[in-house]
Image 1 (cartoon, rainbow, N blue to C red):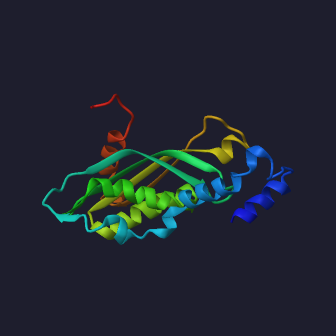
Image 2 (cartoon, rainbow, N blue to C red; image 1 turned 60 degrees about the vertical axis):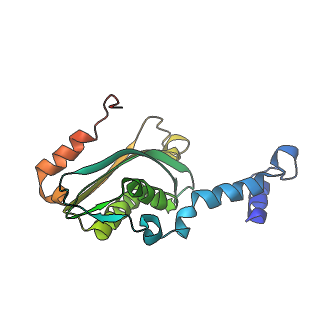
Image 3 (cartoon, rainbow, N blue to C red; image 1 turned 30 degrees about the vertical axis):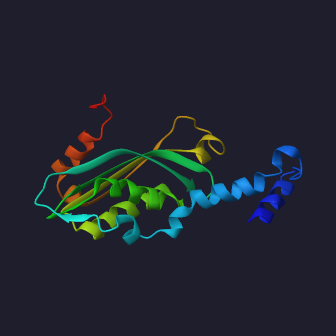
Length: 185
């Protein structure tokens, strides 16, 4: 990869041998490997057996999960928040595992729509809940720095499965609970 990055620097008119760029190919390779480390993970490894039998049947939400990913169309970052909810059906998942699912899928080349669906579908299959809801709000640098150049636009995507799709009141409760508020902590 280092050689490809050196060639890229040459193609844009830079000298990869100049002082400020000498280690750039190595740093870019390390960054890309980190930003795409989700390819090397699978759901079983991420969930690590953290599914527990529990009679809890009310909504579980982890909101404001920070995420960053690379747009597969331009290899530029998109950065935002993910909100994940599910309605347990005799099984719960360790709370940190929700954030880890977001991390696993966001550390791949992505489009926000697919990322949203992957998180929801994986949670649905892993825990078999009564419903799953995922909302992602993100700022895409490919829209900010190039193309349309809209500095304050955010993309919002959602995936609703089971009760969140079938019951408007359940969806509305989730949407109300993820609204920004003052901190409770």
